[in-house]
Image 1 (spheres, rainbow, N blue to C red):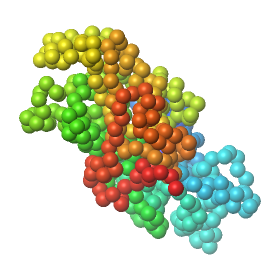
Image 2 (image 1 turned 180 degrees about the horizontal axis):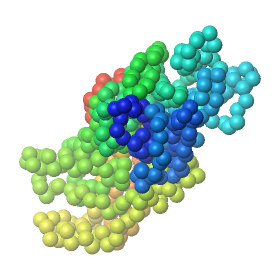
Image 3 (image 1 turned 180 degrees about the vertical axis):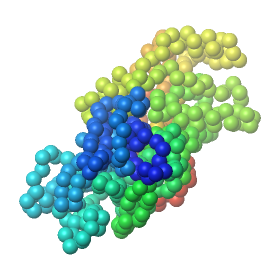
Length: 483
């Protein structure tokens, strides 16, 4: 999933710096990819800036002033927004999702005389919208909407689109609703984004989310419904709440960080019910952090209620830290293992600190048990999900054992997301053939492959309960075997 952002301002009411806010809208989506860019119009001429790798807020204030009122931005793995000149005028387009029949659409355009400069989905989408817009329509808006509808009629898959013309932004939430678009407002400005995580710092409040199939146009910070596409099995991606989205984001009125805490609490509730009491709770940084909070909070809650002996309360800590903001999840197969390994660092002398903490607290009995020959340190590791097992197999498990050597360690993984049984057909982040549970169906064999001592997942029912929406509104196709 890539991140999309658009902004439209009313120059008479808007008091901000347009390019700074366009850049920051992109900046707050960079956890979704490795490259980005934005396009805006100035004096009828499109201007584009591109960025690679992580970008920082130090660029704020460095952009030239502009009289532009509209712009769109992208952060993902492609060279977008894609800008072109056409019979519809000068247009820029960016998208997120997965068009599963993109090769068929490309072939159809070639047969119509089309020529492609690069093999990219966005070029196919742009060509299709332009070529199949009805020429009899007499306004640019009518032609763009006709092109969108023609594309949607032929396209298979899940997507959301932003289209920029000289004066307007057209926002399209695909008919399946998998990839949301959220509108934010403040005086003199309207934004539309894949995530709302950065809205607070930019001064925007969530106004609404586009409905599946909804098309809107935005001009001078005014929104207008421009069309509607027929819905198809409309469900929002559940993985947004578990991992993909930044924790400060909200979808359907439900906070991602709160859902993650609830998921961690459900895992703790299961462990408490089984009389499983770890010594230490560690969250995989940074993606498992809120899941780890929820896990510990449930132990703490039941301790305060007198349902658990205070001596059973585990210690939450972070003996390993993440070095970079780059997600190994988004890397290609060649680079993923290396990125996962090098981004996680051990903190120094942690074992000495841990032993001293036990020795000087009411946990001396725990220390005695650990120091016995048959004793060991029991650790629960909170993961947002177990997809490929990259973090655990060659990285997290071995490094944890080194931290606590020469003491014995039991590592028990807890996954907030249910067992993933298929690659995602609605996006491009996971591919066929790389899902751990598919390659190793037996859970005990999976535990051995991951080089850990235990592995448990939240159930689908618990996941739906944590979000609080009806199950038929949440896509969890990846938790079922591929058909």
